Figure 1 (cartoon, rainbow, N blue to C red):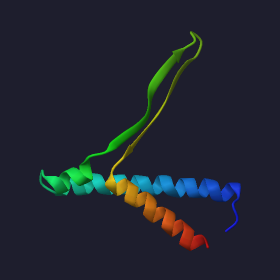
Figure 2 (tube, helix red, strand yellow):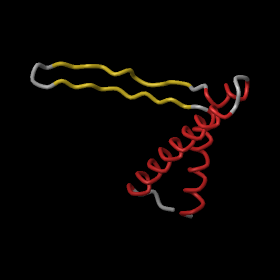
Figure 3 (cartoon, rainbow, N blue to C red):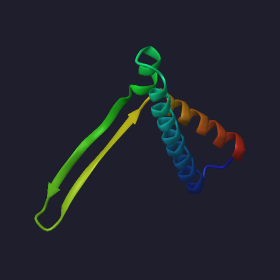
Figure 4 (cartoon, rainbow, N blue to C red):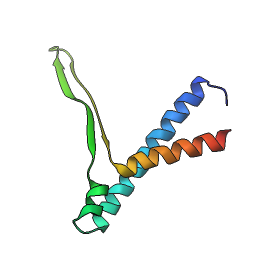
Length: 90
């Protein structure tokens, strides 16, 4: 598979979709299990990024920021989507 701009954008989209599906699955599984180690495995997440920052220029106000919250199932979703992307397009 040649590395083109279209493939890079598609791969990024596939990774985002995999993370979203994994995150929703983790939230669902976290609700299904009672409080305990299995519940914690699916419901705890790691937060990384920049908190929202406001820039007020009196004419325009900008809010910038990006926060990523990863849990175990979102990482598994990213890995699974990357694997599927690679196998389906090769």
